[in-house]
Image (tube, rainbow, N blue to C red; front, side, top):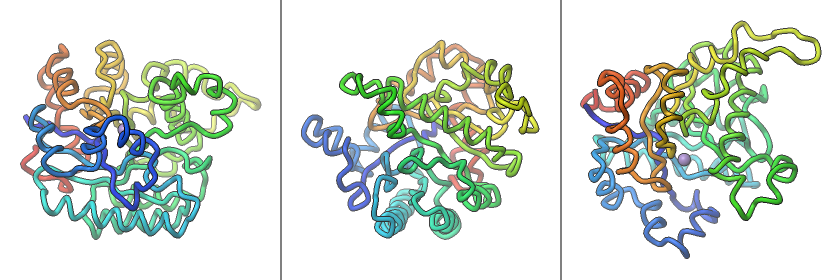
Length: 327
Ligand code: MN
């Protein structure tokens, strides 16, 4: 049984130049900084310590999505994807890659997605949430999702700092406590973004589209019952979707264990999503490979389920875009 991890981050300049967390790490946690920037010995040593065979790499949040110079964001995404493809070519048995997209320009993002998957051999894309307040249910992104469906390549929706208005309305008094970050804000922001995609009818339009979310589903599995029960209870009472919200969650999303090695949350996610929809991840280097691998090894479940979460679901999702030896 192999172990595949797919929400695993790296930084690279110029695309990550000025990254807030990387800058903080450089002064406060030099080893964390080195691990973030490394795609060689430091990373492989940490993978080997945990028995992780394969990482799918993605550029650290917010990728290039915080750039106000759109031409530069497009250029940095292209350079980062060329560079990531080189890492994959140098070490194809250990690394795959998610493309970085400049979602400031939806058409450029769609074109780069296709180039990254078709020409560079990347397995899909990772998008860091809203782009300066614009969410992916904006119809301008339909071309991107159309391509993702046609290519059979998934999009990983990764958290980012909540929308500016939400930051002010909800989190401003508690920023020093980090309430807007991984403790709460990232999950409600990303969970809300997922529901926006579902409620927009995106998956009625592109029923084959596959997306991935981390952190055991950004709290959505826990709330799926209520999402279904109260769906449509707005102004006019019209139910615009063909199905219930949780049916899209189960059929168009996979969730990963990234940074959420918590038995009761895992049990809930596994039960709501089903064993075919849960995949292993760590969130390296922000989280610890050994902790993640140990959690997966120790959680009481059928061995057939453990195999699905460890690798089989990822092998099925990514097909021949990842090495056959991982099957
Ligand atoms: Mn992450």
